[in-house]
Image (cartoon, rainbow, N blue to C red; front, side, top):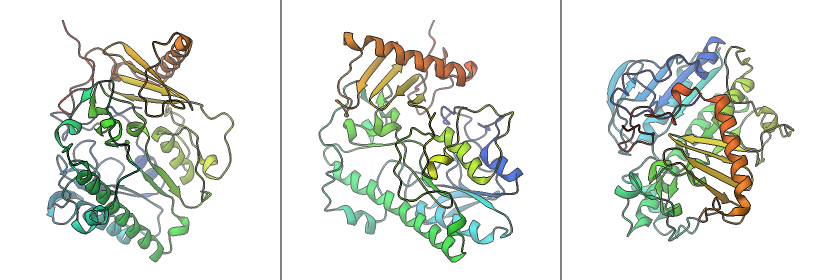
Length: 387
């Protein structure tokens, strides 16, 4: 299943997961007490999302002001709560851990928002930590060679003073780190640390000046698939996870769905046709011999496939594709699609894309169909059918 975007005029009324079986629903059926705290962003925030026994979420078009106050819906009760988003969300998560039924296993989803733009207004004590940092790890003076700046990349960043935005961004990450630390402390105090799987991840990557972009895939037009946009942080710890590993296998959140079920001892429903696959064996230190050797991504009308060395990006709306050699050109600055010796490689990778999506896409839901879904995020990433 693919979810393409959430922003539309009826975003906060519509159940975007209608007809789908969700992970918390499956865990709930098998006796897990389930909680959701923070950002939901998949429909109406004033009623419980399916599968959750408890929810405390940012209500409406979630605020991007880092310090609040903000409106939250806590188990159906709308209230305004002061304080930084990271602190309030962590408070809600700690509350769930303390109030839950201690006889049941639990599943808690914590959706932090602090790293979202506009990258300002974070606690000054955290911002000051990075005032003297040189940010050498962020490539300098790069430009995006295959389109124009869009959204946050065009409107929200003072290009003459990127250090200010970087200090704010780093402070936002630190605020989440502190929240995660509080949750781990709570698990320790309840004696649950050694029997709890902790997963730290995100919904997408981010550019902070990388390639000259601020933001993600929609930070440019046409949409981009640079590695900083599509590579997602993923850290796991807990029972059945061998510590200290840094694995190179291609995995995504479709796989995470199946992996969480596997780790939880919940059988994958046989009637649920799903593209993901559990990588539990990888977490235990083993190798899965027939694991896939490439990764697929999709955003609106843009599709991508990459292996360890090459990446092909296909824009359906403009009928173009680009090929990058990530070994020779890690900053993705040279398009090899027009180089004769790479012609067969381009054809093979386009066939890979076609075969993958023919198996895993519903035509009526595809972002590449003529007309596409409703426009999103002001500038739509969907194909537009014209007469």
